[in-house]
Length: 395
Image 1 (cartoon, rainbow, N blue to C red):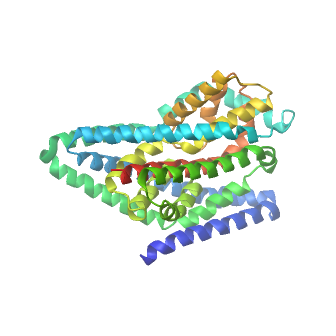
Image 2: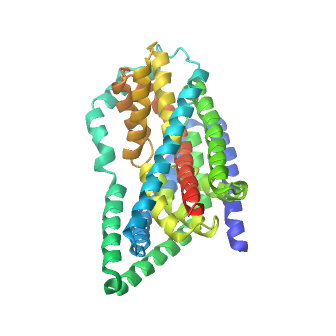
Image 3: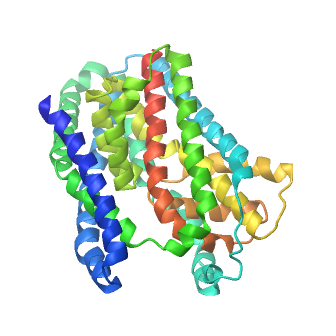
């Protein structure tokens, strides 16, 4: 138990040190020096750690989902759990869209049309690849394929019952092995957090951040509102105090923030749900892999803000039907997009075209997405944890 308490403290300590160190490097060290550290120290450590997590995430997801479904003796019970899970995901994403649209009045549009942020080279790079980029969430969404195969294998094993008991034992052992492997990898998490945050701060474009301050501040306000709504739903649906659960999840939230990828953070979150939040293994193994692919509450709130910000910059007034299309399309795109960094840019390119906004608006978002993408990864996963908590306690 003492070890479990120390790990989150070390991670939070490294997060604080990273903000201080990154700020000092940004303002005091010459650009050449900070660039060298970013390319040869921070980025390699961060990339290696995320690669290790992604490599282990695939077998963790596969074996956990197969193990979970294979233990179902009633397929109707599995169908009910799946329907309830998807229903919670859609409801919470629609809530995110409504919050984003409601807070759009807080946006103040800076005069950036004449700046360097919308020059044609950036636009051409985005627009020429837009057709291919629209297909990438489906082509590279390997987690969807893994989930599909795992669900089929789990259903077949559940139907075969005792005839595949030995195979099920092997699957359960593999699941435990890879969860243990994730524990070993997580020992290096504080170092990765330090390098990841320093790398982000050193690479920040401060001019872009200042020009996009209204989007950033509105999004952060929206996250506060979103968390308050989550906690209210947790109270109404489970009749339990959500504060202990939220407090126990905070260290993992920071870890997911530093990773910046829902897929990479999935094993750590599964471990937290079972060991710290005391959710059942069956709910965790089913809801979290599915939610990482389908449930993106924070992204569903941010995309409308991005679109309406672009509309304000280019002085385009969106009628009510376009806003409704924007909301529905946001939910569908968020469910289709993989949980990888910068995927919001791909989704936004589709939204801008659907509501008649110029694709030049993508160039305004590129710089700030690197920062807000970290928040999206963390709170998208937090929304999935909330869904798992509700489904587990409402059994």
